[in-house]
Image (cartoon, rainbow, N blue to C red; front, side, top):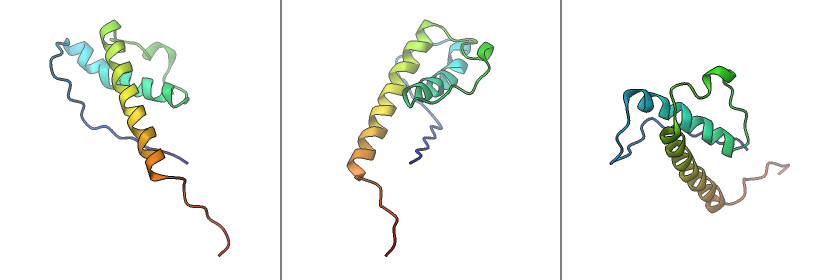
Length: 87
């Protein structure tokens, strides 16, 4: 089974981030989601953390963990995938 998650906008109230941190947040969240899903980062080594820092990394981890938990719970609630077989 493949699961695709497309996040167009993340709203985080109460955080003050620099322009560079805001720009780095989306890719950092995507990296964390891929890590949680056990997938490769698909980025050259030099680009993985450019512009991010401890604040961005921590926020990305929290957001990715919340999204991962929600998608896992939704998959469980949906039940097992339908089996294809001879009818």
